[in-house]
Image (cartoon, rainbow, N blue to C red; front, side, top):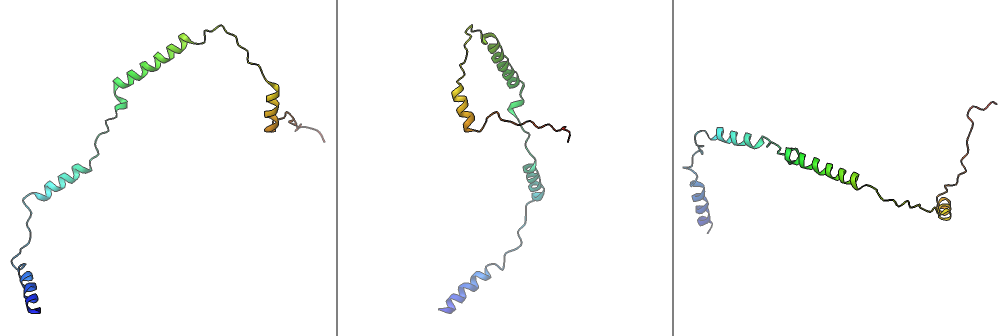
Length: 111
């Protein structure tokens, strides 16, 4: 059985005896190099943000929004006064230690 196995191995190894060196077609390396260089070149950035149509449209939109705010504005004649709740202000000041007890130092005082 080992002779049969050895014969198979010898047949497989002998099948490579007639094999020669692989040959590339003409100008293969030139074409390959050109393809590789083409792949390395960055594509131009086609930014949609800088197209004149988009710039003009966005400027018109901003101007229309500003004009609308100026025209409508605050034309209401309601002069509402907000009542100040001193009790809630004091509770907030007490909670955050915001008492008005700041001390002013005189830096130019004579000794």
